[in-house]
Image (cartoon, rainbow, N blue to C red; front, top):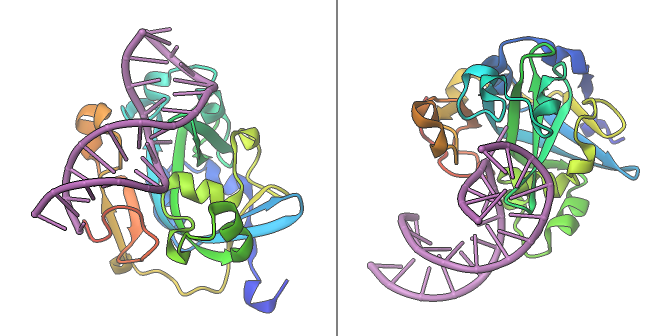
Length: 211
DNA sequence: CATAGGATCGCCT
DNA sequence: GGCGATCCTATGT
């Protein structure tokens, strides 16, 4: 591993804490690392969305709904929740909070950090660097994430969240906005539960809303 | 740059 | 049978 990619993995149980909004902000600037068939790829996270479980109408597990799909969300924090969206996109979430409280954080965008050539290969040669992992479906595709990895712990070999020596992101560098694509959620669609690195080219959708 | 429409299928009612 | 926590392309401004 090259020196510039030295990093410290975060243990899965770190995500058992209950403050999902804080975690969604905290994830910005951290590394999401995946390994498929021994090949390492990683992005630096630039955009996330929090889904706050039973009381959040935008959450799949609103009202403690139990279905085959939502089963994963009831696992303790630190597991991967991967589901198929629109029949073709594999969306990647990190389950948070204690077992039985179905919170999750959707990872929506990141900046390529490790294994960029492989991510380019997975996405196609025409895709510009800043779009390789811009948008939740694209991010999963670049990192080789698919529903076969659903319910696995967020630990080696498949996944890791890690910190490295990157500069600390001050609050003024972070924006928030309503979540994307949840108009079905009534008034909860207006809650500012989307977080992003302000003005970062990899962020999908609005880059400057909020503070 | 903004908007529109089609792709495509597992999950839920 | 209807519809998504989306993406890509095409068309118009």
